[in-house]
Length: 272
Ligand SMILES: Nc1ncnc2c1ncn2[C@@H]1O[C@H](COP(=O)(O)OP(=O)(O)OP(=O)(O)O)[C@@H](O)[C@H]1O
Image (cartoon, rainbow, N blue to C red; front, top):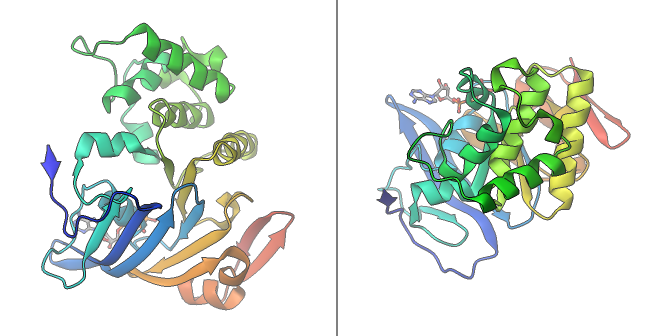
């Protein structure tokens, strides 16, 4: 399945993602409103917004699940400098981890098979999937990198939320994506699981892959992320350096109520 996106760009772009004037309408409602942003390869970014602000819709636009209005002047939607992508190839290039994805793994699939399924952009391994020895070696390497080799033969349905979330990172990493996109990744994780999860993501950020974190929780922002984009009502409210964007005034405007931002060590927290 190949889809043509407007304004195919040059192939030598250093941008991982380049969006200009992206408008998305679903069920007659504008859910992304003239969104323009560029993310360089290797750059780490947090996209923060309240419930319903358009964060997941933005990710679905990156992965071609949602399509921008083609009739808008100046529309650009390029990924790695290209406007046209095979959708399955694209989904391998952008490793995505979300709570939704975790819910689809409630059937009996082993951890190793979950990681291997990343090669096929599928939910599990089926009879028509040809798993090569190289794929299995790579899947085991990823489990080791994430320090969860001991879980390889366990069933996904028997894991804790924290363990399962790290397995899904493994699935996203197995085909060596350019970027890891994390959509509300820490929902339902306790403090210990949160810590392990953050450490895994920090390791990935240090390895040179872009980490794009989408969340409403400031404490998810790992120190390696230096740029923050605020999104409200489908529009970009602010985009800039973390310490300049995460202010009381900006967060109060974002959530439409008085918010106090605290910086603690290398992390941030919001209070009301
Ligand atoms: N397929 C769709 N059809 C109709 N409305 C949609 C669709 N997808 C998203 N929306 C609407 O677009 C708005 C943004 O939704 P989106 O899921 O992107 O928000 P979000 O910022 O990810 O929210 P949350 O933090 O609650 O997950 C919401 O009002 C939502 O109801």
